[in-house]
Length: 81
Image 1 (cartoon, rainbow, N blue to C red):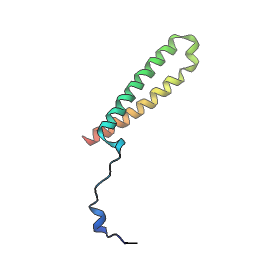
Image 2 (tube, one colour):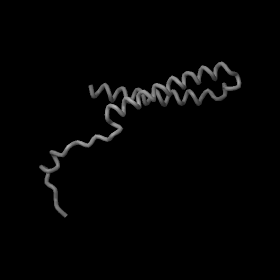
Image 3 (cartoon, helix red, strand yellow):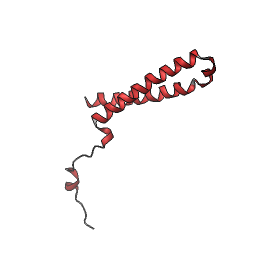
Image 4 (cartoon, rainbow, N blue to C red):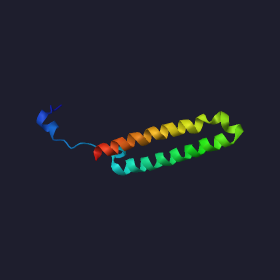
């Protein structure tokens, strides 16, 4: 087994995963915003229909999760500048 020297390890090209590139992040951001709008519509529908009021937690959970993904991706995109 060959021992690698520190000088060989310093100049290696950085590996960027496919999900951390800008087009993939923008696509994920678009889907997260679409899911957020869908969850807002779901909350409005569950408030209008009395039989659906017990299940309002489903669109609320969906909205919170998509909002967290949206904020996370926006922060990553802003840091890249």
